[in-house]
Image (cartoon, rainbow, N blue to C red; front, side, top):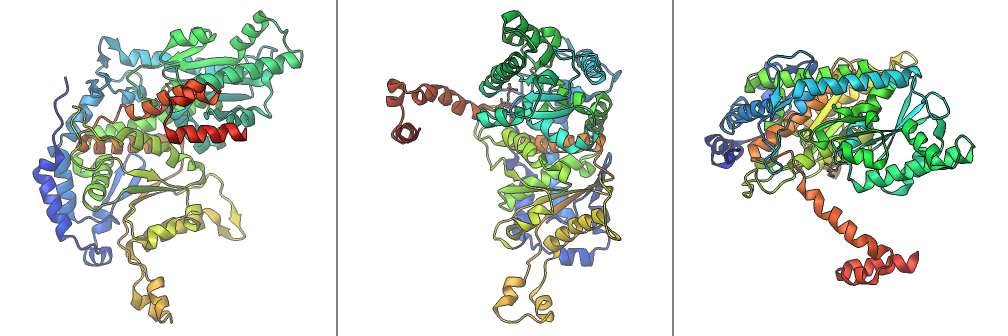
Length: 558
Ligand code: F6P
């Protein structure tokens, strides 16, 4: 039984922070000028991540109050409860154990929760995934006509898609043999385009769905099965018989799910299914069997290195004092900006083209987790929760939306992520292009922090109204996350970092970051509206006036 959340707004730390907010005169220029040690003091390492918090709008006193807020709301204690398997997912009465997915083999003490030998079960599935990936990658596993698999297509949505696709894109240079593709949207365009140039004889589908009930995924899985059958029959590779088709599914479909009974109903042999458990939330599942496409395309060693990275940050979070604990500090800064300084969104700006899906991944992680209006005991939240996460890789974003971050009226804290060593060390003449890229990473956070005064603008010869237009206020907060290279391990560390930032904020707000009831209503209504689309007059009549009007437009234009 979970205790009622501590109301953060009633703590003494909250009162201190309100006073800090009243007294705050943001002055990053002045703060740095007066304090030669600021950059060093506000920079922390977590595993391979070097995290500079010094360009945030905080003083030592504010940071100390934020740390007290974490203490007074029991962040460390709740994190320990999560690791131990306490049912902190109260609305579903479940443990929350994604951290168990990356515990190394032989970790002690053994983790046993609700009568389940968690470590044993996790490593049993990991072993099966490794064995299967090895068979597919070596060509021992073959398609129905005896050909080696060249493409794996993951069919899933939300957490059963965003994690695998983000990681695959980030580590794509390591996919040298088998290529992965991803189908998620029920817009038939997605499946049609993704399969257009694929050969059914060399394509392996992974149906990835925690519940194995998700409309989009099951619809796409049936469409993929039809595509496979049609292609194989048309080329004469198989006969048009039920038996031949069943055999084709056995060679070209595997599944990942917590609902193995439903996998069997779909016609996939459960010997070719990889399980996980209800204590892994969808958006926390890339490190479970949901990552099977990654094992296949990138190889088991890469996947296990990724898991080791996650684990390194779990260890950091569990064992580092709050005042040096990077995910906790970053979560606290987000609370500071959201609840005290009025920020409503948070930009994540990777200076790494390979991380181009990272902001989208974080949107599900953070917004499905913390976009809540009630606390874990059902009572209303006592303060704003769940900021909007968004972003694009630099430098592309610089030429699109950075204008608003630099000179707009809204406060947008931003995380800049960069890597010392490039994946592709290209040169433009005698210039290292990655070096130029990194110069932009450094320049942007500098410009945001320190701005450009009217005097500096005038000193360059600008006069009149242009002076104001060319002035930059500065004091726009950023965090810089730097790491040696975008390796699988570092990527695991980055993901776990944001998981635990999300956890920290959720705990302070008193909300259950592990359910997602807010996505249910739309799903239910789509099922009710579907007959109206098909022309069922009764279903049309049951709709509200606006929906009826849109249905009329649809029917008039089809
Ligand atoms: O959108 C709601 C949601 O339940 C997500 O949390 C989840 O990641 C996604 O749907 C997919 O669910 P499943 O893996 O069960 O198909």
